[in-house]
Length: 109
Length: 114
Figure 1: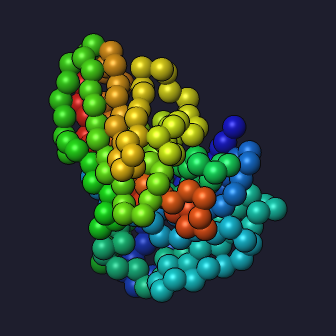
Figure 2: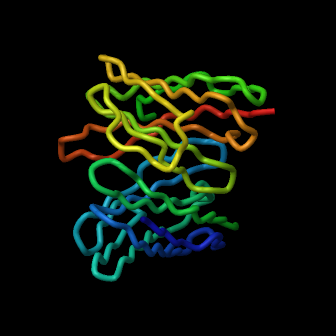
C-alpha cells in the first residue's frame, strides 16, 4: 500500500521562502516527484529525487531522505505566479505514481 | 507545453452512459498512464499501458478500461457512468525502460456526470 502526507495549505509573502514537507510510506519505492498544478490545469513536472540529498534547480530545490521516508520542496524568492498546488508523488515499481492530496500555496503581496 | 494532448477538454454525460477519452503521447514516449483527479484531491492512478498492453492497474473497477495503439496513443473507456466519476481525467506519457521515467501530463478532460 501507500500513504503520502503533505500539509493542506501554506501561505507566504512575496520574496519569502516556503518549505513543503512530504512523508511517504510506499512499498516498492523508487523515487519521489514534485509537481506544480495551477487551478484548472494539468500538473507540471518540477523535480525527481532518487538518491538522498538536495537537488537544486533555480528557485526550487527538492530534498529526499529514503531512510526517513521524507522529502521537502523548497521555494525561494516567492513570486505571485508560484501560487498553486504542489503535489508530492512517490513511484512504485516501474509504473505507478502515488500522489498526496497536494499543498495549496498562497503567495501574498 | 508537454506535447501530450487530450480530447475532449470537457464532457457532460448522464448516469449509465459510456464515455471514451483520448490521449496522444509526447513524441518518443512509449507509455501512457491514466489518472483520475477529484476536486481538491491528488490524482489517483487508474492504469498504465506499455506496448499496447496494460502494465499495472490501480484500485478501479473493471468498467474502467483502456487501449493503447501502435502509435502509442491511448483511450480510456468508462462504462455505466456514476455520479462519482465526475472528475478531471489526466493522461501522462513517459519513456518506460529508459532513464527518463518522468511522466508528463496532458491538459486533462473534465468529465461531469449528471
